[in-house]
Length: 199
Image 1 (tube, rainbow, N blue to C red):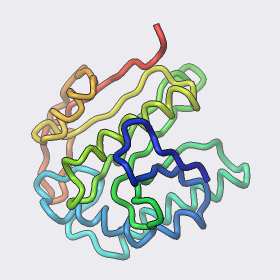
Image 2: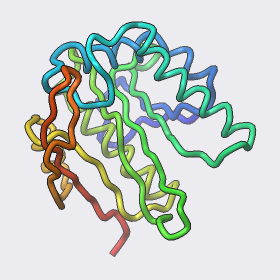
Image 3: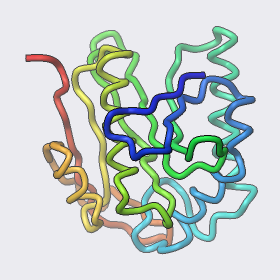
């Protein structure tokens, strides 16, 4: 288990890399609730892979799927393909924010990774936690995975657009109707890139 205070992390908080299924299980309840909030609170703007209403069972199934993936990777059945980070208050198991890095394993794409599932608890938004998670994920991808090109996408008509721009991400394209929202509607998605290699 790796915990990191992080230079941009608000005092009293830590970011933990989830390494084992057992470790994930200690956070399962708050991970479930965090995912449900981001799907159910405003389905017309949620485009993170689920339909509303997202039930307890469905939300837990998603995180247990990550747990199963970890188990297979630990057994050597597959290369590590999903690095999940959780941000908590020191001494607490309640997850306040998440982010994940998904490296690309194709031989000619080993320079790339994607950042996904950047989620912040509603009570903790606008406190710098999302920025801390992004900085941590970017640094991890660069220094630990040796990835130089990072990518992400977000629904175009959401405040996340401004968030990523402020963090230095560059838009490279918009795809019509790429985003499928939790209420069943569709919208445009914008793709971002960030080059993180040293120059």
